[in-house]
Picture 1 (cartoon, one colour):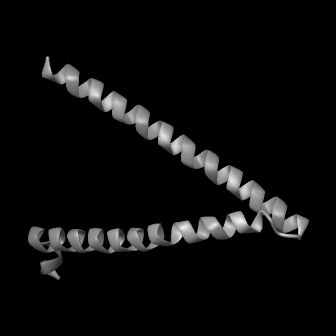
Picture 2 (cartoon, helix red, strand yellow; picture 1 turned 135 degrees about the horizontal axis):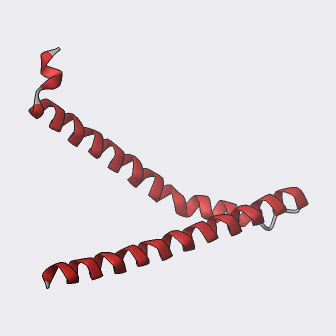
Length: 88
């Protein structure tokens, strides 16, 4: 079991895990458009309960996406300011 402690082995395992996560994220991302269309379709359901839950999900998810976008923009701005200050 000493091989588990070797830095070369650890870095290879880390790289493989990263590749596996990236592959999974690509699969999820490719399915997101279809999932969003399905959810939007449910907003038009004749069943009021389904319509209500779908509408609520669309609004909640939309707000989360917007919030994440705003946070990413703010973070990028802060990182740029820090980088500029470090150049001085």
